[in-house]
Image (cartoon, rainbow, N blue to C red; front, side, top):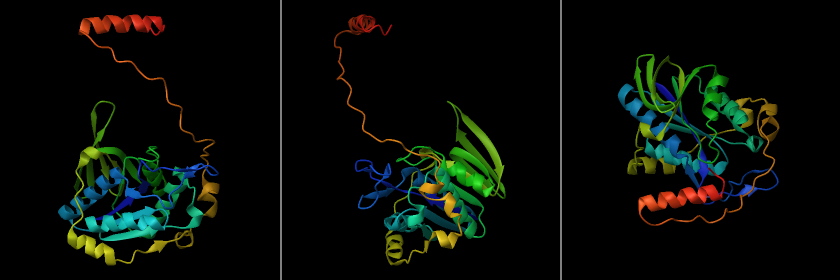
Amino acid sequence: MRVVVCIKQVPDTTEIKIDPRTNTLKREGVKGIINPYDKNALELALQLREKHGGKVTVLSMGPPQAKEALREAMAMGADEVILISDRAFGGSDTLATSYTLARAIERLQGFDLVLLGKQAIDGDTGQVGPGVAEHLGIGQVTYARLVEVEGSRVKVHREGEGEVHLVEGELPLLITVTEEINKPRYPSVRGMLRARKAEIPVWSAEDLGVDLNRIGLQGSPTQVKKVFTPPAGPGGEILEGAPEQVAAELVEKLKEMRAI
């Protein structure tokens, strides 16, 4: 079984900075981490390889510093890692990103399963995974919390609106996972030594043969008009006393505010 995992290096959430000119995240010089949900996807891939055999390939689209995320993925156990990086990709929205990742997956010339986290913590759109599946022309299951593969059949327990859905599909398939699916392993010492020495291949826009009109800012129909930090709201009030007294006082205050 060949499993492809798409990971994203995201900024440490306490250090996010915005380029006021382009309204995109500043990534250069900012400490990055592997998107936590993508680590769950990688752990699932490693577990499936341990059970069924095969190969785990990890792709990441980003600036050169994203190699550090790929080294961590290799230290966790990935067989192969590839960076997709080119200045032409800068400013790509979810549509352009999913198109680029799909072209990279096609260049691998064969896969059974594509895995991603349900969303990235910096954008929280949850759109890239489904977009990749659409570009590849394969089925997809999102928000998976349990995945079982038997031959070419896949059973997925996915989160629904307050319930769990059982979905079955055929390989090849794309799945996005939630944090409930597993607990990612720590990198091994042997893996860290291997990752430190590894030469990580970099695929450019020319290597992928992408349509330049479908990548970067010019290939991104989503336009962010303004990014700002909302002003802090007024401080709240804590009511103290017996439950009955607090409830009555709360009702009176809500009436004064004409909230009820």
